[in-house]
Amino acid sequence: MDYQNITTERKEAVLIITVTREKALNAMNKDVIAELQHAFDSYKADDSLRCVILTGAGPKAFVAGADIKELNTLTGVTGHEFSERGLRLMRTIQSFPLPVIAAINGFALGGGSELALACDIRLAADTARLGQPEVKLGLCPGYGGTQRLTRLVGRGKAMQIMLTGGMFSAAEAHRIGYVDEVYPADELMDKAMAMANEIAAQGPVAVRLTKELVNAALEVGETAGCEMEKQAFALTCATDDKNEGTTAFLEKRAAAFTNK
Ligand code: CAA
Image 1 (cartoon, rainbow, N blue to C red):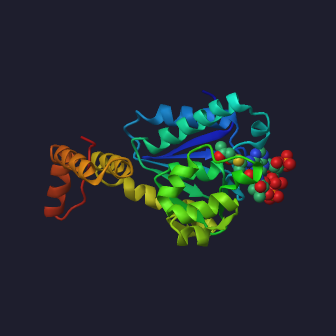
Image 2 (cartoon, rainbow, N blue to C red):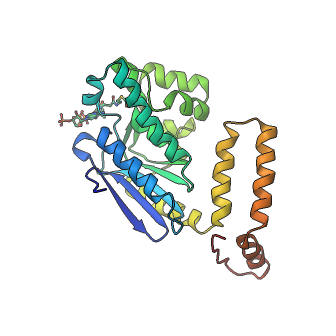
Image 3 (cartoon, protein in one colour):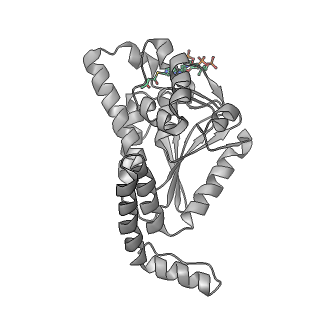
């Protein structure tokens, strides 16, 4: 697929995906959603990759939401399809086999906030502004915000954010756990790359399984989740990487993992 609205760039084991619809503040229309879906689907099986960074082009926006021109034309029937398309992308990112870091370089509103919420770690520029302004448009969130934001920040804050539709500074978003770290805007990508490289240096099978287990913690009960952890732990014990990682520690050298 020839991308018109996103770019993909490999930096060794890290893939950077950038939404490049800068004139519309990277708002996600149907094409942006289709291209992101295609990119995540195609890189899923690339086992030389270790981490993904998702960001927006330009200094102003990560993603300023779903495209309001498209929202304006929706009916009850097409609204259902519209939401399903976006939800599918969010599920793809959340269940992507590798960690996905959102580098929130500016506005992350509505569907843009939901895109960041589907990622595993949210790093924000100090200039970023986040929120779920759908109610201002007479809409409720449609790409999973009511569910993921509530799990992340708790019921009261989620209600405040989604019922007022207000915008929150990066500092406030950090205080309530909406984003995980805040950096000066001009350092954001370097910090995101440093974290991605740090993740890339860990045991790859262990990283994949850990992501799955943390996601499972929000879906299953504690007993079932711990049972899954036991199975996954045993699986990592049977890998070459566990032998390499533990031996490297004992031999006081860096581990050379092989993803096996
Ligand atoms: N959809 C389509 N176009 C958008 C857009 C969006 N979500 N956000 C910004 N744009 C466009 C503007 O229309 C404008 O285009 P023109 O130059 O052609 O007029 C361009 O981007 C620049 O935007 P502004 O001139 O508005 O820039 P600003 O600095 O004055 O304001 C802003 C920035 C506060 C982010 C403002 O653009 C804004 O409020 N945008 C809408 C944010 C929003 O409501 N997002 C949620 C959408 S609902 C949703 O996402 C549903 C869902 O969950 C599935």
